[in-house]
Length: 307
Image 1 (cartoon, rainbow, N blue to C red):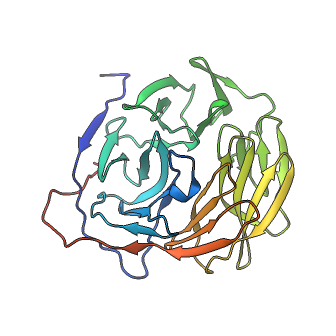
Image 2 (image 1 turned 90 degrees about the vertical axis):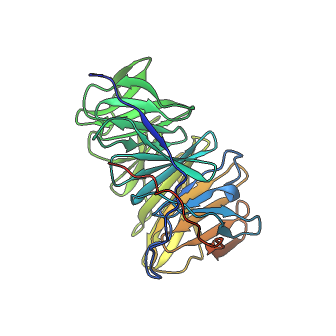
């Protein structure tokens, strides 16, 4: 139907043989758990491998299955893991099977950031936090990025940052017009710092620190990964104050996922499959590596694929 997105949901029992070499990336993202415990986050590999926490500080893959696309980002909504692939499709994990979700034929969907699961196709914004994708509104121009949370929905367009009010997007007065990376409806990463979109104040990163990943904690607190040389740090931003804490990760592998909870627990995942866990604010860190415990391979249908 013209003017309306077409939703195609293809249920599959995906069984993808592991093609990963020993030196290939092991993880593509980290999805927060519905229970609000960072230690229950789910780690996802680039081919849709799913690693669940075993309760002893290790993430283990016990079920075969995957997707026929390279995954590049992961989030969660109402307990379901949602992943973005390099192709046009988004993927949703239901139990142990992936669902391929297309919001529009032959059009690339953009997965949103923040605590609310959102996606955009062209000008159209969809909520993914219910059983079926629900269209929220159309932006006045192509959506370049979007984020959602307790404060609402924000999109980045060629005309600048806009906030959704009812079913209409309105400009954010005095917001930076230069391109930044939306972390949530409250925070946006910019060159050498982070902008609080509520106060429009910019907090500069410590000298020499490069931020590679960020997430929010309850909306008012920003957690970020800072890299300086070979050192990796957790940066906690409250207002304009930054607390710094070293993370004892193996060197050289980039961080691809960061999850925190209100109890002060934090999980950091790296591309090579390491996960660092902090047990509480100011607590100790433990580091483990994802593990494979797959049953013997059985024949089955092909994995979920995007067009």
